[in-house]
Length: 400
Length: 220
Figure 1 (spheres, rainbow over the protein chains, first blue to last red):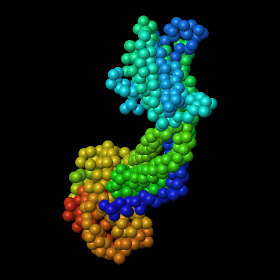
Figure 2: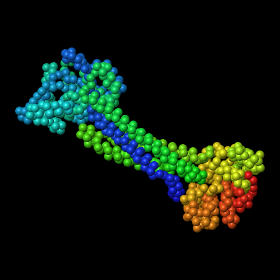
Figure 3: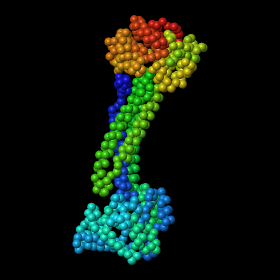
Figure 4: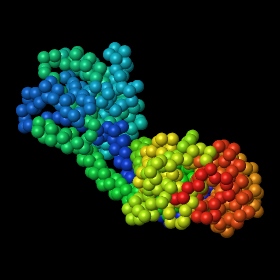
């Protein structure tokens, strides 16, 4: 059988043009690298957004209208409004902010005699919307010694670069913030209590000072005025696609406002999406051209070798045996191209991984890009396989 | 296994269209009664050149289909056979030696035979060497076929044809370039191999037939 293979290969290998094969390989490789690199870039800049939530979470509120909302406190979302929002196709999950119905002040002791204290507000969200370490993010009334707090990263920046700098106070880093002893004094309904609190983290997603929902519910039950209406004034929505134009339409139709830079994130990912689509389109055109080149080369080769292939089939070789040789050749070349393309894509992705890391984006998984390149390679190989088989079958009996 | 090949009203398209007089006295073309060849036969088909001997062989081997009428293997019209049927037939049931021999000139004589032999494994490599010895071309076994004389090539083609199992062996002017001594040698080799399996032989000739004891001679 090995002699058979060797002689068969010797016959069928004739007229294979290295030039044509190289031209196909080069163009196919360029196309594959462009497509997989574009997909990798897109997944890199969008995937971390999904994990840290900056672009996939939207905070929605009613626009503040004049002074009215200051006095009557009824600018919250009704149950009906929340229900309608929940039914929108772009809404994956939805959580309402709970505001504290009591007074809060917080104090920090920075060494003996160096304390400071300030009036504060607190909000809470369902735990799954808070980007804090889940092991630290819990509170059980009467059991837990300290109340974990998550603060907007913007507030930390405001303190470090605004307040602390102008007052000559020490700056606080992310890591040392957890060590700050905070006293949280809560009062209302004629009661007053001081809790120990600790900063559990800084959030990009939450533009507030948040405590666990369990603490908020418990404290509201004791210190808040039970008669006061408390509808949520802000809603956090996790969306499937922040670039979805339907979101913008729905919000403006209902007079809702979107929290700050979240909209920008959506717009940026929309632009990135369009750019990626264009680049992928170019890559697909190149791949298609290279596929055309491959088909032409295959047809030319089979035409030049038709004496050999026809004679072999007259000798009793099956069309599958003949086409198998060419298919194995094409599949091998394509597999090598795929490996080179993945290596090239990985090398190129290093060019942007450092700048992106500087911007706080850690990069996504390369699997989607590799899967794309593999799928294209598979399609090309399957297309060539069909073309080779049909040509060989057609030449089986030329005068049929 | 194929026990019988039957031809009914067979005629090449080109004769039917352009040259009806050619087929007037033919024993096969447009014959009134079916022509049949049975397994084990020794059939010679003789004619002047241009009467369609190679066409007939090509029709039976499924290489060409430009004919009118019907060819049947054991009652099955061969027009209905697909490529996998033909592949099986060409490996197991019908061996073919084309007039133009159709060897691969860049391959050695041994490799040309090996192409066929390794496909079925019917014969051993040793059998091939013995056959070259017997037909007097053992010294050329590893020479490229392109460097060999036509007579030598004809003998290589005979060995290749016999290197597979068959119910029928189609030989299209197999010894046209051989002297009478080589003809006898080839004929006894072919006769021996064919009778060992009971295969029928259908040979054509323009005047230098393979030296067999024919059971039937037909003028085309």
